[in-house]
Length: 116
Image (cartoon, rainbow, N blue to C red):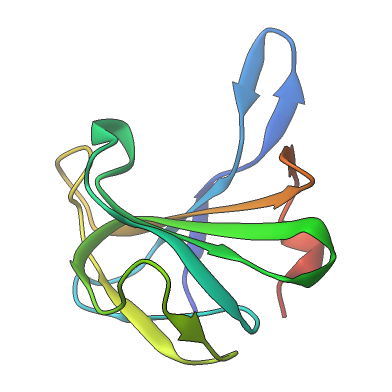
């Protein structure tokens, strides 16, 4: 997926942000970054809108938030590159974007070094 990073990860005490926001057109295909199993697929956390969390090997998990449509369900296995959602603006209004997080053993890490 291509897009412009509009907000970056930061772990500073005065300004924490646990992921990155990528500006992309509404309806853009959101793909799984790696093989795994869907842990969460819902809109029960309003700040993240329609969100998917995938558990991967090695204690890694990825989060894909602010989608307009979810295409997978909890418990479902997914493959790297599989379309799992369509981007949107389901969290905060205005522009369409993808909120992407990477967690290692439950701790947020900067996802940018892992992106192609």
